[in-house]
Image (cartoon, rainbow, N blue to C red; front, side, top):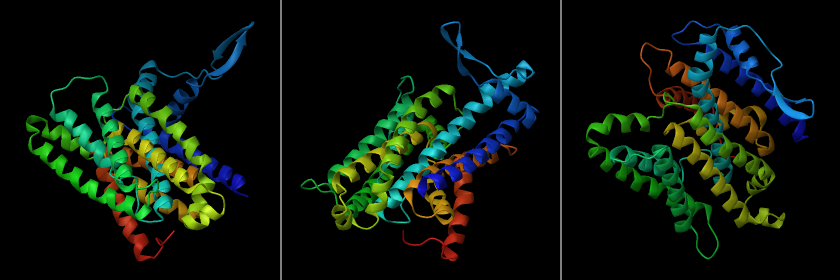
Length: 348
């Protein structure tokens, strides 16, 4: 029963994502219509074929589009939009797993200190006089992984990792890393503005290079998490019941924790700390499709991608661009409070 529902909802959300991408790519200083954007996207499609006996890539569409228009869409607007979709996809995916893993509706990708660890790595790179290719993203990624490993090591004893201990260790580490970030900011000097801007979450310097950096990681980990969707459903019943039903609880917890931590690290490393996507999107989709993670994981991820592309479009459409993290918080917090008042957010 879950596969048809997954396909139907995923198809509908994918269509919505494509529509939002087209509208977003049409908005900007240069006047470009949605139809021209659609032509550029269709012209970019390549299909495998044969030239005699040699395999080649062929273009099925050849719409007339001005070269300047194609250049603006492909090289300026699409990298930012695609990276936003990847980051939103990853954060919502990780948030869904964290809420199921901790059986806590307030859990999000930052709950075990992954985002704070990434922030320490990125701010340290900005403050220190270092010059390394993809250095800020690499430092943020490493910082996130070190934080996740530290929380896991602190919470694990005798081969067991109690969820409550993991949660408390994450909160404690977040507080400590917050102090480290404050210290680094006090000593940032002329780099203070750059560091603060990164901490707010942004997509303004997106490139195809960052897309190629994040996309393989997110796709691979999404496949792993989908494979564990049923186990995540069973874990909601409690660890004892899950063990009775044949789930290897500790191994499953390690896989879920490591995978969701790395997918969060990949997102934060390329876009900074963007809040509320991993918190509110899973709740919104849970209200629509229900708690079955076989349906909830892909639909939340697609909804997160759509949400972040839409909010980033708002962030860059005003008289002056603002970090997208401000927009997600400004829209997400009131909506979440509305859900709380309506008692739509409750125990999982």
